[in-house]
Each structure stands twice: as C-alpha cells, then as structure tokens.
Amino acid sequence: QVQLMESGGGSVQAGGSLRLSCVGSGIAADMSSMAWFRQTPGNKRDVVAAFASDPNSCYADFVRGRFTISKETAKNTLYLQMNSLEPEDTAMYFCAAKWNSYCLLREDEYTYWGRGTQVTVSS
Image 1: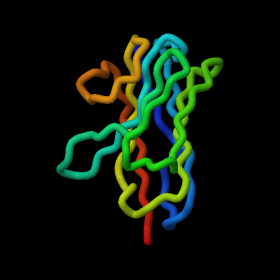
Image 2: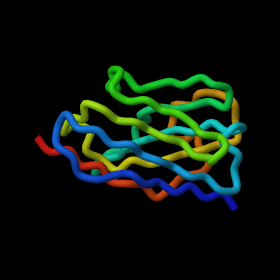
Image 3: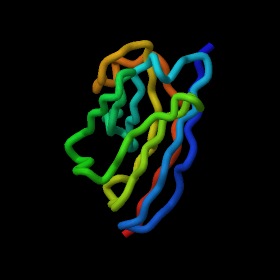
C-alpha cells in the first residue's frame, strides 16, 4: 500500500521561507514521478513543481525561481523549499506520486496523494 505523508507547513510572514517534506512508503522515489500541488478553498489543485524519476524537474510559472523541488531517494522523500513566500502562496499543499519517469504536470496524471499540509503566509 502506497502512502505519502506531508509535513513542514505552517504560518509565516511574507518574504519568509518554509521547507515541505513528503515521505513515501510503498513506492520508490527513484522510480517515480513526484510532485507538489496546492489548493485553495473552492478551487482545483494546481501543480507547483514536479520531479521525474530521472533528475529533471519542472515548475509552474508562478514559482518564478522562488521554490526548489528535490528528492532524497535514500530517504524516499520529496522536498519543496519555498523562499520569498507571498500571501498568494497560502494554500493546502499536497504531495503526489506515480510509477513513471516523466515530469507530469496534471492532477489527473497522478495515482497517489497525501493528505496535505497547510501553508499560510501573512502580509
């Protein structure tokens, strides 16, 4: 059974930083496409960044160089380093995974999901 567990969310002021983590069990990070999505109430999940099983990453335009996605395969963990946070980044952040080798950007392309971690950025 595949499980994804996010952590690292919290409340910060604009300009601050947070590092999100997603630990996977039942799935090998080095053989999976993994991604971070975010969702605000009443809206669909939007991709933030994705990481393919080969060392390629891709980002949503709104990231604008502020966020970095990375994997630590020995720990089966996906990270999202978020810097220069803005109030518009406030959302629930979800980790997603799929047995795959491509940088997948659509919500419907992922098979497994975590329960999310809340990020709140105040002005």
